[in-house]
Image 1 (cartoon, each protein chain N blue to C red):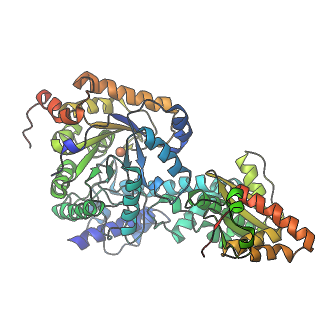
Image 2: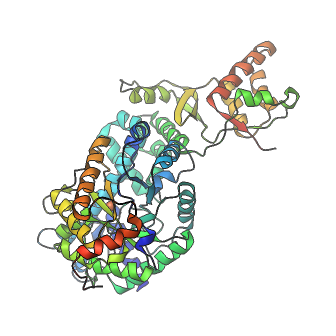
Image 3: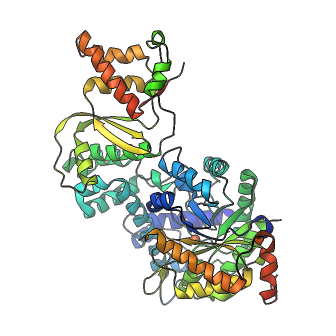
Length: 301
Length: 272
Ligand SMILES: [Fe+2]
């Protein structure tokens, strides 16, 4: 079974984006790790790969994909998985993640992360595919909860029950996006704390922190704003439950200068240190140990 | 049950990509359950089921539009934002994305522009889009170790004539009919562009140290590189220059071009 001991916290990282390539290479900022969008580095050659080679010499990375379409009813794309595996072989990421969603059907790609109906059938469908992917990649993957704007009448469970059921049945990890929980909680009117309480303890290997935009009746997961205070508060809540978990700041539009990202990462670190103490030398082993005494008993496990 | 999920995804796909919008897309659906879309998607007093699907429809269109604006800045500058918006509306209806990478979304745009009313209104537009796409392709092309002058010198001169060469994977040769490289260069420098002359414009796109460049060639150089591109021998490549000049001129042309190609990293060793 997947274990947090095999996913030691990488600390606080930021997403590596094209506008910052030059700055990162020149300044080698004090950042614990970088997350890359896998698809941006799956082309056969060119500057992105060169940049990543150089970045990888100095930082751990994780690969975060947007096109696995694990929830689609189309067959899994072998050539996509093969490229993904090849890219992972070259850059040795700490882990590979994608989203619990579908991104297209009928051979077409919507380039968007669409929610699934929360049904037993969908759990089995997705879990079977996750196992297939993990067998092919020869490593476990993490699935991330997405922001969503619609829900299906046929759903028979909450989103967090669905996420938990897929992760358990597929034996995969979870990348818990705190902002997505906040956005979806607003859009669908559920309790974000109940969501966090319902996610299985031992499977969360990474957090995402990001900003969103307000559109009156709904929130949109745009990654173009600073992280909101309510999301920082939820991050604290999640840290109390899950303990020390790698966190990553995402910013994809209206991207500020790198130091603003670094400051956001710094704020995440301060929160983590306030709650869990400074990061020790042996966090990999301690990760679960530190977290547990401070936590209320988990009566859902 | 699996097919039910497939039906659901196919329906949403059709609605999200309906060119005239979700509401019109819905009118074409004949097999909706009682309650229509509201029987499938949960709406509430804040946002109806339709409004919720429309959020996805907007994101689909604008995500691709934004990606193509980045990849085709000169095409956008020439026709303006409104026309570009309409062009992309028509384009993704005809060529919906299929590839896993959004970087591939513009692959068929130049060919589409050629047949589109906007392409007929601006006869150079398709050439310009083709050049912009070649730049994108070159940027992401496979790496290979280019031949340089040193490497050539290591090869015994008597072996040169039979030597098979090839162009670097990031080289693109475009037989364009307009000097659109001037438009692209102007847009890249944030300068005024003017409609390009209509004249044969054999254009080379290449990558050197991960930067992409382009220039218009004389016909013999284009033909010689084109020969290299299809795996010709060094002697055959030289022949392309000889055909266009006197013997003495040809030799100096070959020298001049070869050293430039090697400096720019255009050549690799071809197959045996
Ligand atoms: Fe995320």
